[in-house]
Length: 139
Image 1 (cartoon, helix red, strand yellow):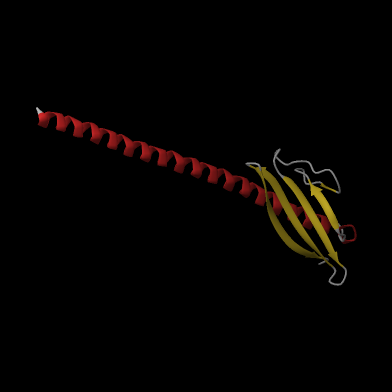
Image 2 (tube, helix red, strand yellow):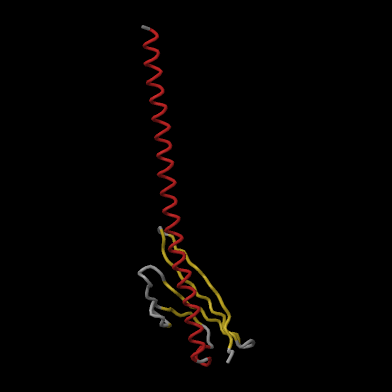
C-alpha cells in the first residue's frame, strides 16, 4: 500500500511540473508573438514616414524646377497630403503624420539645403524620420 501512495504522489508532482512547463512555454510564445506584432507595426509606420519624407524632397525638387527665384529662400514650411507647400498650418497626413520642409539658402554656393522631417506619435512617444538633400540652380 505504501508503494501505491508514493506512485500516486509522484504522478501528481509530475503533472504539476508538466503543467508549469506548459504554462511557461505558452506564456513565452504569447510574449514573443506580441513583441513581434508590435515591431511589425513600428516598422510599417516608419516605412510610411520614410516614403512621406522622400515625397517631401520630391516636392521641393518640383518647386525648384518651377522657378529658382521663388524657391531660393530659407524657412520652414508644411507639405500636406496633396503636395501643397504652405508657410503655416500643418495638416496631418493619414491622420497621423506631419511633414515639415526646412529650406536653408546659401548665397555663396547658390544652393538650398532641404530637410524633410516627418513626425508621428506612437505609443505616446513622438518619433520622426529626417531626410536631407542639397538642391542647386542647375538650369
